[in-house]
Image (cartoon, rainbow, N blue to C red; front, side, top):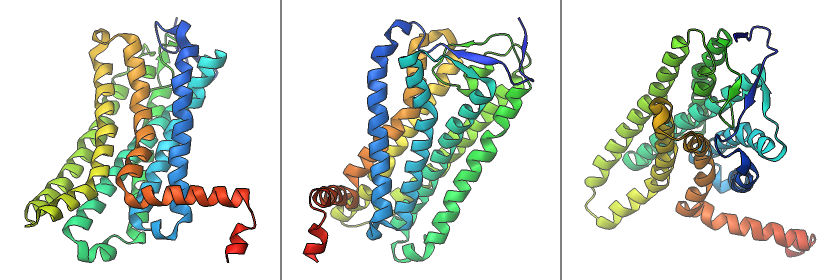
Length: 323
């Protein structure tokens, strides 16, 4: 049966995890746990950057923007997934589906662009340390964040527009959220433009962004190898380690998710859907942990900030008394 979506009244039925429908309640336990950890971890770093004057630098501003993009991605996915698991809310309107898809993919593109900006930050810190504050000031950091947002909006906005022109012959979507390729596979009309545009976005994100990050780290490595002191070399590499680990957990799952869409029946459906969820949630889950461990400013200030809030909560007059 052909279903036109021009009226905007049609709905998709999100199946959830194919083959594991009876296990949705059990699956909700790790998903809800991840939701709480993501909100606390990303929200905690945002609070720390906003309230600690020593962290209000361009580098931490870019980090805060990364946390925001992770939160947007999580909020676009997990509340809907948990409603499906807990309450069996499977239906989603075509407009709601396209809006969810836009925010999911836009936040992923913004995250990738911010990682490029942070690679540039590390390049300046290592290769131009004496000019760091001159080159990477708050104005440039703001411009880089705006450029990342603009890239996400302009790259992803055509996706829902192309999908609105399609005719759908299926409405049951074997997925937990409205992924671009999952929606494309529901259509029975000419989907080649949407598929080609999806590949174009993939190349612009994983291709171009990884190339720019690779160039930055090649220049960093070249500068590090010229250092005569082994201690100085290790210290310099350590300043880039957090960003390097974040790159791995951001791009490796994304690459696997992209490939599983093209491998078709080789990958079991439930494995593909779970991987698609992990691709979105893994960076949001581990980014705060990585930066909390690897960046001493956050590692030292977070416990102090929490302890101070606990003391003030127990004894509101403590602050005034100490002054």
